[in-house]
Image (cartoon, rainbow, N blue to C red; front, side):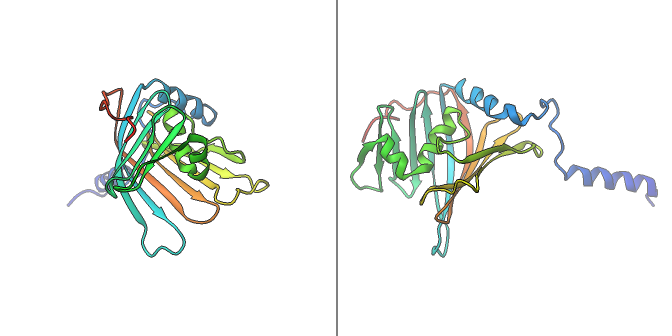
Length: 218
């Protein structure tokens, strides 16, 4: 028979192991320093590659639309979002002030970057994220890094009630970062018109060699 004191110790060890605690060796959490530390982390990298899953939920949709693909980023301002599901979809920022968008096997359409970002706010969000900006340029969003839980933390951006989002604009954003490294793990964007898009990032690699044609226009 196991002594009660010993059994209690085993139970306590198992139970506490299920509760995320502080990461050993992690710096003290300082909410005000998170945006600067994240920017420094991102700006030290020449290139970033990762795999992503994108989940889109909109009013009237019976099932969420799930897409998968890869992202290539290179400083300054070059971004390629390449979809494997649905196959052929492409979003490309070649770094010359334009955006190239292609749906499936259709013809690629080139637009001014400012115009494309205005109609697709998540585009500006992704580019800003890899350039080290936790908050997009849109006004009226309040940034609040929340204390880490285990090996990750959430940075919330919420709309000031006194400044409602424009039609089709962003209502709130939550960015998930690893702790204490501050690598982006995912981002969730809620829109004022209803619905949300959620990105989950995996297999992030920094400063690797990118394919030569990564930012070539199709």
